[in-house]
Amino acid sequence: MALAYDTEPAASTDRPSLSSVASMLVPWLAPIAGLAIVVALWWIAGLAIEANPRLSAFQGFTVEQTLPSLVDLLASGAAWQATVPSLVRIGEGLFWAFVIGTPVGLAIGSFRLLESMLQLPFQVLRMVSPLAWMPIAVLVFATWDGAIVFLITAAAIWPIVFSTAAGVKRIDPVWLAMADNLGGSRVAVMRTVVLPAVERDILSGLRLALGVAWIVLVPAEYLGVTSGLGYAINDARDTLSYDRLAALVLLIGFIGFVLDSVIAVAIRRAHWVPTA
Image (cartoon, rainbow, N blue to C red; front, top):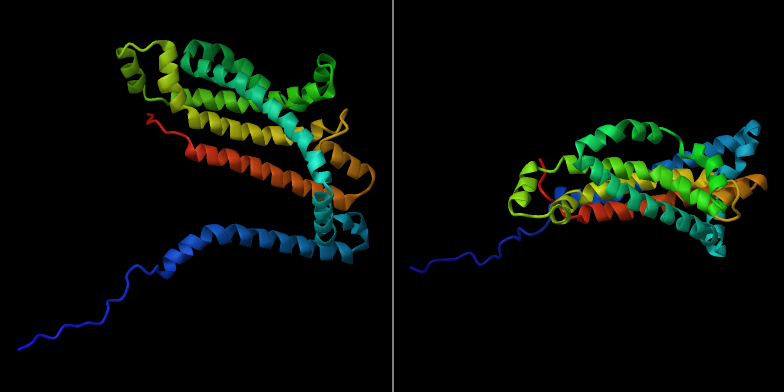
């Protein structure tokens, strides 16, 4: 007797389920939904402003006024002209903060006596607003650009120092003992064990430093310079161009977000070494 076989093709099991599709779409749709909610609330606030004569001074901050002004800034090249000087200043400030703060953090994390000696003065200096150094910076540096770079450095150095030091102290002592038993010099241990272990801590400190420095940059550019995002905001305020002012605020936030995202990607791709 012949056996009958079911020749009907089996249903494919590779087809993604609804839950898997939803899990893939949520990371993309959630930010878009959040942005849409913010814009909707902004538009509703604009309706309230238009309906209340006492809020007429805020007419330039509505969606209908701000977004066309932002498009005009981008199309005319004014946004680029204002952004480049600011990026140069913050780049120089972060460079010096990194060059100075990283070795200081490595030293503090490696030597407890040095940490005990510097903890109090560093914590006191960290609590001083960088803008408080403005009068001294103007006297010391020959140019306003130099003074602004100093203020950015003063703001950015502390997150790098303390994040790097914390990373060094979290290194598993077994790794250091193994390197010492293998006869590695202090320089070799620093290069092959310590630096790879604190790579993410250094980058995390740099990310925090960027946030602080970006906040300091704009008010630092209010005085003395004739270029940059802070100067553009000050100029828009003086000329009562509130729609342009609001557009510049959005531009500053977007640029800061992009810079932060770049460092966040670098942190995710950094090498990892087991720590205690």
